[in-house]
Length: 629
Image 1: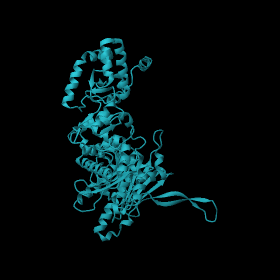
Image 2: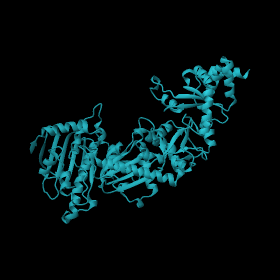
Image 3: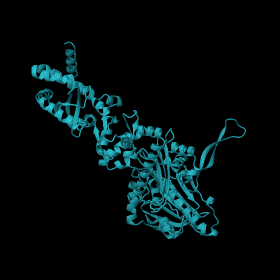
Image 4: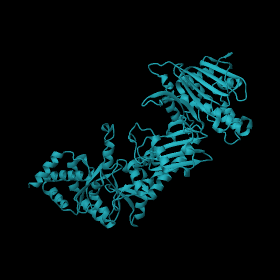
C-alpha cells in the first residue's frame, strides 16, 4: 500500500470546493453519476472500433446501492475502469481530468460525448462523506486497485479485489448534525428524486434495488417486504427526439409534469441547432402567469443541461427580462463550464444561445399574433405588461424587438389593436398617434378631449395600465408618427386661422385668467380658453413630461411619500360654452362669485380627468349653493 499526500494547492482547492463552490450538497450525486457515465462512454467508444470488447450499448449500466446499517452509498459502473497510474493521475491531483484528456485525444472523432471536463466533481463526495473508497479494475486488466481517502490529508492506493472491470465509489456518510441530515442520502426515495432531477437523461440506465411490498401468495391482504430492481432515469430526452415523432399530448404532459402547471402551454418551441452554437432547446409559452410571476420572489431562467445532465435549474442569462415568462430548458454540448458544473463562464457561447432563443420566442409570438389572434390576445392579457416594461426598461433599447407585439384597446371597433394596424388605418392628414389614459376604457371615453379627436375621424388608443404611457413616451414615435396624449397641451387639431382667433380671445381675457390663477394658486400653472372641447365646459391639460396619469402612478410607488411628483396642469375653458361668458361677467362685477365658480369648475375638471378633488366638502357646498340660487 502506498500513502500519498495531496499537493498543498489541492488541499486548499478541496476545502474551497466543499465549503464554497457547490451551492447544494445534493450535487455530489450528480457528479459521481456523471463520472460513471463518462467511464461507460469511454468503453462504449472503444467497443465501436475494437470488436474484442464484445459489449453493446445495452450492456452498460450504473448501479446505486444503499446500505443503511453500514451508512454507505455506492455508485458502481461497468465502464473502462482505471489502472494504478490512472488512479494517481485522476484522483491524486484535484482538477486533473481523465475525461478531458480522453476527449482531447479523440477530438477529431465524431460522437465523443463526455460529460466531465474538469476532474473536480469527484471530490464533491467529501461534502457528505467522511470516508471515500474507490475500487476499480481497468478493462482488460487482471489486477484491481483500491483508492482510499478521508479528506484533504491524503490518500492511499493499494491492490484490491474486484470480480469484473469497472469502478465502485463507496461513500461513508457523515453523522447527522442539527444543521445537516446526511442520512437523507440513504433514503431510496430521496436518491430516486435526485436522479430524476439531475441525471434523468443520462444515456445509460441508472438502477437501484427499491423497497416495495409484494402480495403473499395464498394470503389475502398480506404483503411481504421485498427489493425490486428499478431503472430510475428516463434516459432519452424528449428534446432530442425529432419533432415529427412527438405528439401534442407528449409535449403537454412533459410541460405540465416538469413545470407544475395545471394547464397545457399556449405554444411550444422546439429547437435543434448546429454550427456556431450547438444545442437543443424546448421552450414553452404558458397560458397564464405563475402565481408569483409579478412579485419580487419570482426567478426567471431556463433549465440548463450539458449532454443530458442538469447544470442549473434556472439560468437567468438565457432569457431577457421581457420574455421571463417563458419556461423550458437548453441542452448544450459545448458550453464552457467552470470549476464546477454550477458555475458558467460568461462567454460568447452563452450569449449566442440567448440571442438565438430571443429571436425564436419573438418569431413564435408574431406567428401567434398573425395566425391565432384570439390566443394571442389571451396571452397578452397575462403577459402584455411584461412586454411593455421591456420597452420602458434600459432606455428603450429593446423597442424594435417588442413594439410590434404590443396591443392596446382602441376606439376602432372597441378591440385591441397593434401599432402597425393603427398606423395602416391613419387618414392621410393625421400627423400623430393619439392616446388617452385612465383606469378603464369607459373613463377614458368620457374625457372631454376625446370628442374633438374622434370628431376629426382619428382613432384613439386607450391606455389603462400603469406602464402604458411610460412605454410610449420611451418610444416617442412609431413609424415616424409621434405619440400624443389627448390631454396634453401639445394636442393640436385647429387650423391656423382658428389658432389666431383663439389667441386673440385669450389676450382679451387675460385679466380674467390672472384672477382665476390667483384663486387656484399652485393647483394649475395657468388658465386659458380652448377650442378642443365640443359641448364640455372645462378640462385639465398637462404640459411638460409628466401627465396626470403618470403623476398618480409615480406617487403610488413605494417611497414616493418623501418626494411627490406633480404634473403641471392647465385649466382650459371651452370658449364657445356659456360658462365662458359667465366668467367674464363675474370678473367685471363680482369677485366673490368668480372665486366660487373658479373652484367649482376646477373641481369638475378634476373629477372628469380622474384626479381627486382636494376638498370634497367645499366642492359639495359650492354645488349645493349654486343649485339653491
